[in-house]
Length: 331
Ligand code: PBG
Image (cartoon, rainbow, N blue to C red; front, side, top):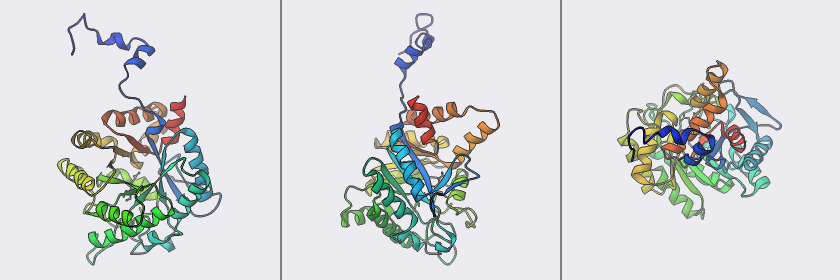
């Protein structure tokens, strides 16, 4: 309830730092952050990514150091993405099923070094493994096949779970994959492996730098509009989320992040389940471009945007600024 001026002056509560702290409705902590990291072959390798200034690909040994850094900062979970060598990519993406692929080696190395002190989320989709850069298998006409792809995604998920993944995160947008993956995880005894579904994932112009990071941008000949959602749609997002929850998703994700906070809010209010958002590569790059151009303050932009996700209803945010933000939050 709001009274009338001057009995009510909303600026009273804002007049001092202690009072602002006392009235703050939304709190951001390092536990709200999931840190996406890119893996590369070799040892002692850090490869900076030009289109994501400040973000690098790390070889497995250095990835273990990043994991330790995250755990020390109170970041609860990493999201891992491999940059698969060209010669290991194929039309059918079968490297995704190799128990010794880059992803699996990174999972085992981090688990060996850190035990259960950090969560490991793995992306399920074939784009880091296909020679055409699409997330699934291609039919004759170039259409991404649904059911055939789901079969491979099930194998990819089991491969990741066997290597130590805690959260399987399908980002492929095939229909029916959550149920198929859940069934397979149960059958294989991975009953406590969670599924965080990229449930409302849009065909977005904000993914470009990520595709550089995993090495798929140059390979991709067309867009992903036959499986990722039309940015115009909200009702459809609710249907996507409902299906994934019915099929056994433990939590759902909205992606990209900031331009889609309305979707976060609607999903949260409709389903009252844990909702995460992905502040994607293009969003990160936009903040860094603003900083480089001298038109924005990095620390303030990072904390404000991340807080906005929490305010909209997110349980957590995947962000390339996770380590930086956690450091800021520790003061
Ligand atoms: C792959 C995948 C993408 C992202 C996460 N998983 C790219 C895409 O769908 O083309 C994007 C993340 C980002 O831009 O930071 N399926």
